[in-house]
Image (tube, rainbow, N blue to C red; front, side, top):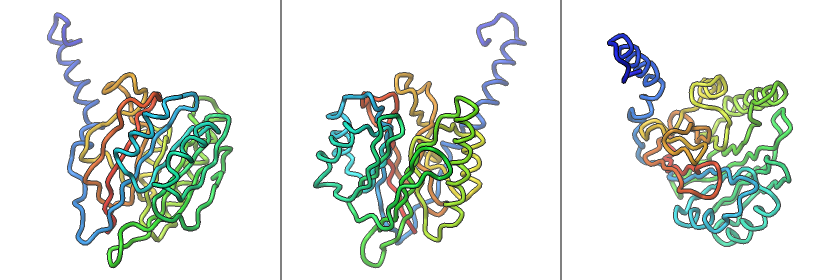
Length: 261
């Protein structure tokens, strides 16, 4: 429209750009400042793509970032075997639920996972819920970790499952007495009903202060959309957040440094 001949089309292009910039601009606004003292924890999430065979790329990225807690989705039996071996020493604490469909899920952790369980959360696919201690000594804090992968709302049935799982996730967040980190491929874009529902339940998007950071499809780069999320309790600061390089998946992974007050 901007290269159209008339000023009317140019003004229309400008107004459309402004309208679309509004829902995006907040991601560059500063987020909460890390409190002192605070318990540090580095978390990571990545949708592996069940058919992906680039195991070495995924493991190399994990080792380069050295996260404390890792959430992985689309964990096939082959992926589970590969990651169990590669992370045996660095992340000995885990709950792994592999599957032959696209909804296998796992959490790997450097620190012990307390009360770890797999939960369907009102739908057909599992999520992993656990508590992990962030920080040491006087700054140690208990953190509720929720790793999830709701079905994509691509049909009436899938949309219903997606809504049920989102509602159950919101209930978990609202009931938690500890700070929460919810991470995974949520199959929900910012501004969608599901995303707004989770924020209303008491979460904050860690992209605030770090930009749009689209994750899918990975091949589109900056023109993609963010559907892989790390959402946290409002008091949790996130001084660093970045995306993975190409890992052979159709998703980019996300890693975030959190500070728990």
